[in-house]
Image (cartoon, rainbow over all chains, first blue to last red; front, top):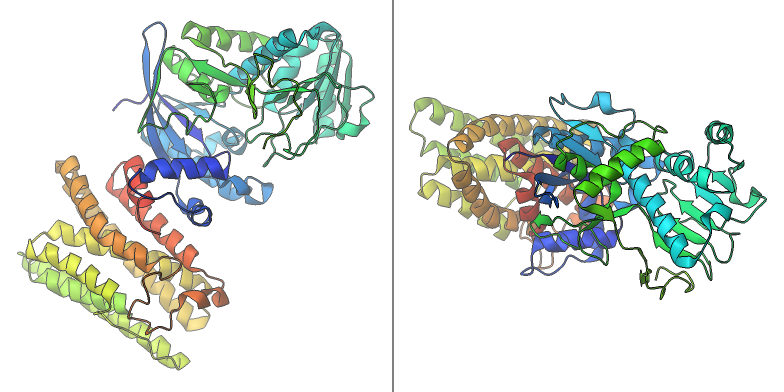
Length: 364
Length: 221
């Protein structure tokens, strides 16, 4: 079978892993107890889990594979980095052996394989994309949409980006900074923060940087959480009471215990396929656990969109090279094939009707 | 040790359905090697003052032997290789290798050396089986699945973290599983390593990974 694209991912949570294993076991077998799942998952070698057929509104079709690296959700910390790099490389080798023409790297996969592309097995005609450019596009679209829904004038807003020096964070900064009055950049590496701030400042943007969120002089009313966190542990602390907050992490960034009464929180970076999406076996709603059909993370959708476009090229690679022009280019490609921003939602459900926007943030 | 004796019996049985003298010699050589492994384990036990238990009539082992003998009855050479080399040896290689890493002195060296030898057996069989699969992949995969249901279900029960159906008749109710932590191992680790080795061996045969993943996910725990 010809494989146009491959998607490499890993379970976001133990619940997600349990659901995948439950589908694999089938309805005739009882679901595995949680302790067995935690015992078994770390031993599963990376491999294809299902076939993915993507359709375009133009009528084009692309065939793909979802390959799971099976990184256990509690082993994303730096202590497991070598083991996890080996897993992603093994998953990449699967994609190459399957003859995938383009491979999208989901979640931590792109971070882990960054700088290791040259160490992959002979790639023949397989190219890799981190998918981060389309992720940035959907985050920015989501912020604009949410601000409009909430009546927030984005041009008068102060933007805070957590994880600002990452590929996604810096891409969001470049796209949004020119539209805002002030930008607050937060990350762990102060040198990278300074470089990004200088770049934005040269474009006339007022920028403040800090490695500690408590150091900022102003309250943000637009927040993007794009840090590479191993678990949802981020507490934003002081932000405007009416803030729009986009959690674009995979796994999610925001701690379930963070309190932001009045803030409008949504999960960002997600797109929806309107030309048809099929998983064989049927993993709908299992691999893409969202309250709307055919919603997928932007990073994975980038590879699908490029496959539908028959543009097998490493569209997003490296760190810090995402520009507004590249974002516009991939958004145009995606839109041509009916891949658009997904309806906005958060842990409480859909947010676009306003019912869940201003509830006290809790992730249950 | 029971596993090694069972393997020796299996290879001896296999020699009886081989047509070519070279195949007969090869099977008997394998049987002898497996007997050697059993003797090596018994010798290591004597050094420690332990009488290594063995019972090829124990219920799980008996089922595994019966599964192999069904292939013999059908004169199914490939089926025999799949049961012995792909399924049973995957478990042997993975568990011996892990014990080889933690056991001290000659005991560890013996486990590690036998794991390496068994791995060679797997590589040899895999080459033969890959060629066989090349002529009829769907039929081959169906055969492996049928044997998987029979053999791997039994192996999975043997390797369950707890012996839920009572003890296995080898240990005489002195099950080793609860003591594994004393040598920084666990039943879950041995089972995980074994299933991982099995999946990788199936990968080497060319059976699609998404198919074998479902097979393994459906095993009892």
